[in-house]
Length: 212
Image 1 (cartoon, helix red, strand yellow):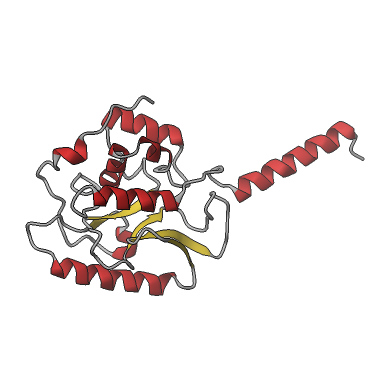
Image 2: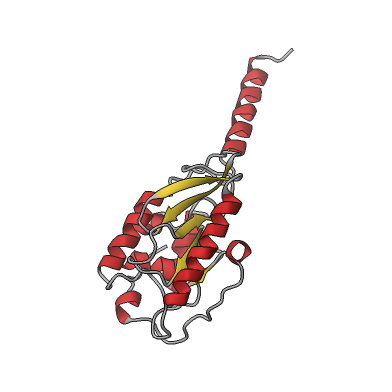
């Protein structure tokens, strides 16, 4: 029979086990609505264009910090430690695939189809605060700034629709416009456009120095 101390220890271990299972990467309020709103504000101030033009889509997404430094707290998504985000921005000024918790489709503008998904979390099966929900595939932010959770059951159809929308949008682009590229090639397939090698506009890269 467990004594009082043993009972307390057993309860503590059970609570810790529940926490680790429920929040596999820890609690994280990575507000997708705030990110969607930030993307819209960014575009409104730049002739309708969302962040684009850097080496990777994740780097382009981190341009949001130029408008609102508090967005730095959301770019970790649900699986990247905040310390990694802070140190990467302070050191490199931009995030990369390993330091950003969101997949991003760059090269879009406000006037494109509002049903296009511009952001989704890089881990599957997690709810808004990083807690496990087995039926969820991804939390998604659409171009119109709205968000939704897409179930595992509906994800294949959702992806097929996204591929169609992106193909239609790419076909309308001119060579002078920013190329549409995505970080999640496992979902959307290989990128059809090469990244731009010319420096992005100064208005996009004028990022403040961020301390870790």
